[in-house]
Length: 278
Image (tube, rainbow, N blue to C red; front, side):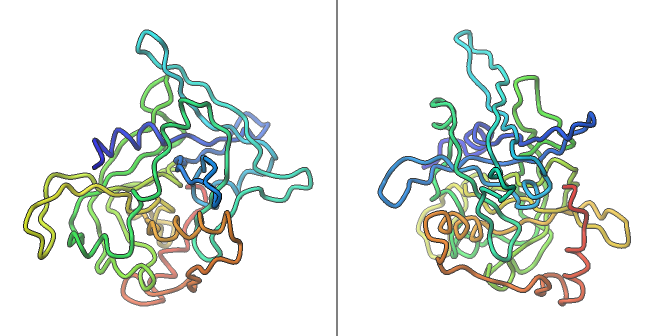
């Protein structure tokens, strides 16, 4: 049982940034997952959209840790971490066909405790078992245009309605749409569902619905016009990317970039032809 998924994810969600040397910076969102190694050693993994790290040209980025003070306040304590080797090669692992990346990091002990367990990620049957579909509300965490909720660096929580049908299976529909505006800096943030009791079909009792549906990837643009719709990549591909950390040859779902998601392959290709600034 998850006490409060929204609060737990707020603690696990961090800003990722890299100064570009000209007074500007590139910013994205990520969240921490507790993903032990195959031999059981503890490991904290940062998950984000692949393009967030890909657009950072330098070897070091900063991750926005937050540290609790004895008086109950918080302080923002960003730390540098290596995203590229000396030769410029990426240190992160990316999914072969989806915009998902994962990288092992060293986090302060108290912050590492905020990393969420992998079993909070939606599984193959999660959407269908809870009858999740178009019109349901989901929430997202992020740092739109690099803004945080307060000086302590906590992410901003927002919500939107699922704007796609159908949502499953993920292999056929690897992304879905969320009706809310995405800004630069939002990419890589977790999208999740946390609502009151809902009865699963065939179940005798109602249960709270709390799970991570996926991560925010892009803002939909068509003919240079923002449609105020976000693209969410299913949590299945986060799980697959985590598996690749230990086994680069692990079986993953390799889908074509233009698979049908909204009325045919042509429409899907147009929706995915969006700016990488998100």
